[in-house]
Image (cartoon, rainbow, N blue to C red; front, side, top):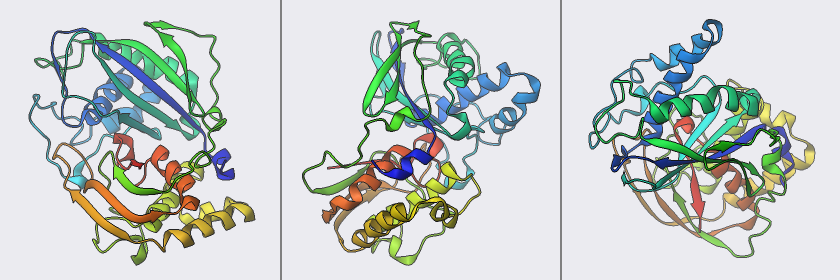
Length: 332
């Protein structure tokens, strides 16, 4: 296990929503809608003193717009997307279909970080918002064949290492389950179980690097795509947000790492700068998605020493718009 994992407070939830309508159409980027709908419901339900930051986020120029009908897309403007929750969080929708019928399930993860990695906050604030979204008839997002108001919260799990522990089963909540912001690393052992070399890195969601200071060697020959070293550089930037605060820097991360952690990270960075990309297949994301590009990179090899850090980057998501699920990938 990477020692620095102990510095990250995180709770990972896996949600299983079961459709209870004959036909539901999913937008191209459901996480943007998901953030808007749940965030608005949360803002309306909180006491006035606590609701201010949520209301400000949910009434931003883009987030307050009416959700477009199914099949239509947003502006695709990376800089214009507002409406991220005022808590450090990731909404990650598992790849799936665009149409669902009765009894079919939609899977997604919610990841809470820092002070907001609190199971009580999830149970008292977020879960009730999900329940309201499941039966809402609010005209702001009640469109024909839409998801909102047409699903049941069938199950919910919390991560304990690589295992998922259920605390909602068949719609019934088990309050006996105890959840801590440290259990996500229990037995995780990033990279330790991998015995073969990886060659491909496939982005599951688009990524954006705008506004993130990076050295020239963080990029491949394509100035918009990251090298392996670049991914580790952006991981450091992400860790600076999650460990030391949103406005911290990479230097702040290095300062809190032990000499052993610094040495391990430096060794991974060194080997990451050696392999080159043999091919790339990238394209622009759908206009509804934030981010600049999505695709697959093939390397001569991906050094095993870098795999734990790459796996960590895929869990935490890297770059901008991580709240909407941007910046994650798989290795093959």
